Image (cartoon, rainbow, N blue to C red; front, top):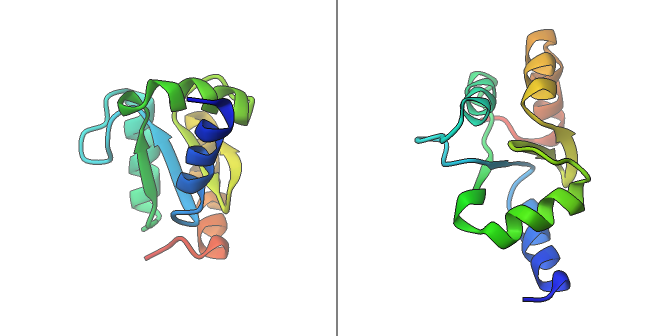
Length: 109
């Protein structure tokens, strides 16, 4: 598959919802502690989000590292823009910034 096709898949995921989490595993069954913490923070903020299990698409996983210029997962996006990984999401959660950003993005239930 070409780079442009993989990039198109990334953009399709990013347009699926205001908040998108590229993670290891699924929200119901996270497969790493960092992904589990990111999901917990989003759930605590009552966020509605689109989750993408990067283990199901190794090509997308590799392309996303270059697309975002961010080497690790999870990766949280709001309105198509990378917010950051687990540490940034948790820091924002603790300060109340995450909930406010989700509300402004229209990503809360």
